[in-house]
Length: 414
Image (cartoon, rainbow, N blue to C red; front, side, top):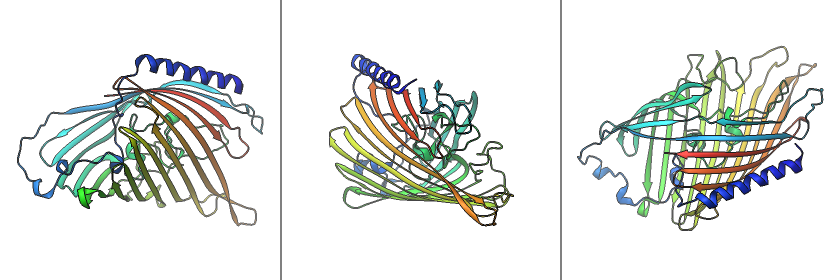
């Protein structure tokens, strides 16, 4: 399909979305899901857990609760060229797909003990469990999570579940296979930093402190010790399976200003892990979120992250020494146009560095950098239905074809 036809198809798609929105849109309701604590509207101090009312007696509701989301997407990708430099033919593609459907069951067993089980019921036509854990709250400032949980690296992974983020596409750093990364066969392109949602088994200590008048400053921490995950480049089997006795440890700290009308959060994360028998990887990252409520129930939010990871390689006849590296960043700007219509822009960059041996036994790095620009609109239809449309431009390295992609997605939360 040529660019003119692609543009026409996109225009028709958006026109159809506007028509549906005009016929069915009702009052706005935020999609359910995990969000950055410091970007939420300030909670009244009386509603927060305090040390002086922590031991207040009262009945505990042990009723199990349920929440979740259903997502369906259509993606059409148009490559600027359909023949690679070596003569290999590559095709445009379009596909309908049901995204992973996560259903979360959760509840309280006592005033301090709670539980959560979240299966994934459409995982590659299979069934898996994303999270299953208990949380024990010693104090509002200290709680222990034991079991399988989402790793708190950066601020995207903990909100990477369907329905918890507002764009059609995840950032390049955190691509899932559902995002349909570009595939050119034997010719590699930069891969993601971690596959999301990324979970692991172990223990997590976390907590928050509120400071200042009306608890306007929030300080949070997370520290975990888990089995550890394989390197992303090892695709011989499921990379989320641990394959050595070494453990993974890491954490995240953040500080936030929860004001009115401005909220700001800054965070930093680290992660160290062993994979295979003795190879290591280390990653660190910085993240930031800022939002401004310019009108009641209408916000402009900016999110960004930067990640840098170094990973040891297994020496071979062609890769003699050095570390493999992945660096990436994204910035997302999103906001409400009206009570029922939102818009966003997202910029991504991802660089993969591979050490390559030369004839003289010295090594130089092979670097591949991919960039992407995405713009989108979202429409709230009824209380629990959201319709999204997105156009993205993929700028691909090594002389490979660039790509235009049009996506339409429905999200139902409950």
